Amino acid sequence: MEERRKLVDEKTAQGNGLTDYLKIYFPQMVDWFEDLDTELVCARLTNWPSLEEVQEVPSTELRAFFHQHHCHARDRIECRIQAIRQAKPAIPDRPVIEAKCTVVKVVVQLIHTLLQGIAELDKKIAEACAPRFFHF
Image (tube, rainbow, N blue to C red):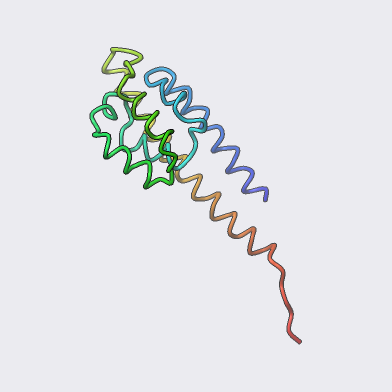
């Protein structure tokens, strides 16, 4: 349990760092997603780490992406797509955006790895806590 807590704490720290980076160049992500340290957001930022990139994606592809990542609330998906289409870049400085995108991709990989580690520890904890039947 202690090791799991350490990984969760690290995931939280990385999620906070991700929020800080996004607030600089892509603050809409903070508004569009309640939790940034999730598989959905990690996949989203891996594929399209900037507003400009996600705005180029056809709506049908975005819908398929959300469905693939277990987001099936039609109204929520349509609101997100509409928000993507209407959003304006937070800053015009392309070199800053590119640098932040690079760092965000690394942070997202760290969060993804931490999520996998937490899931693995969850399985081990469940196995250790499962009732054991002894046969004599």
